[in-house]
Length: 121
Image (cartoon, rainbow, N blue to C red):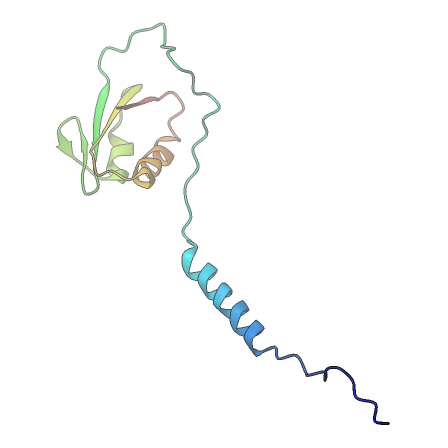
């Protein structure tokens, strides 16, 4: 009598498993972003509260993808920080302004402790 097993054991092929893992690794590497984003501290933000002393002359900033205008004069981020002499700043955004560009501006303005910044809708 010949003892024959019902199935023969084959070696497991790991080639397809390695291919799948490589494709997943490639997908996640290409779909992730590696840029750094600025942070805005919103702990002191309050809705609807204004200062008791009225500001007589606020500065007005228009922010777009390619432009930055302070009170009607074109400027840059570096010059804007030096040119602000008031304690209230109103920021108007163009339709094509990205959130990252606004964050970059707000991070630069974080150094002014007495500056009240309002982003207009």
